[in-house]
Length: 111
Length: 113
View (tube, rainbow over the protein chains, first blue to last red):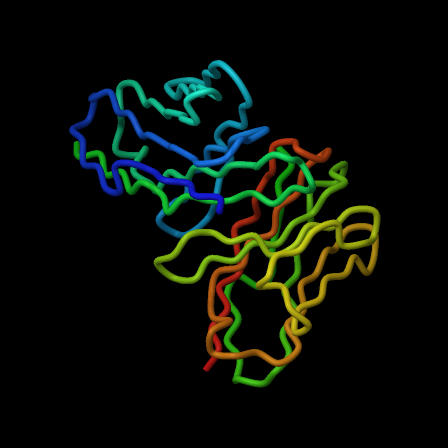
């Protein structure tokens, strides 16, 4: 069974804080997707990675394939970062494009 | 910047009615997907579509569901006879190639009464 666990489920931070959201999964994967879901429901792709680290602006994503773990970091957090952050994995073997999603981490950044 | 669009943003229907949800993927993308998210739950994969046929589908995607690319731009999801439990947010996504980053539309909120 493809389990994707995220922690924490809910996170409240003060503006400017460094934030870490974690994602663990139970099967081998070929790729992992970090997504951001806005309060209105829309989903935005942040990163897709299969190894190492990616950086975009204040966002950094890392993955450790051997440990089956990924982290999403937000530096200098801002209230506009408030959203649900979702991790999704593409399991091996690659028979298709069926991503399995975590339940999300709800982030609130207070001014 | 190119984006995936979906219409309508909100659809209300009576149980047993047919609904068609529409999506316009990013123009140079070749792979298309439908996902759903029941309120308060995780996003779930429904189906992927490539080269005018279904490439993968989940257990949720039963005979009540169908997908179609009726022309060069639209990608549709049809639910033949809606049930109360079909109420959810439905997201369309597209990717340039298989296993590439997927780009999501804003979603259609389906409410079945």
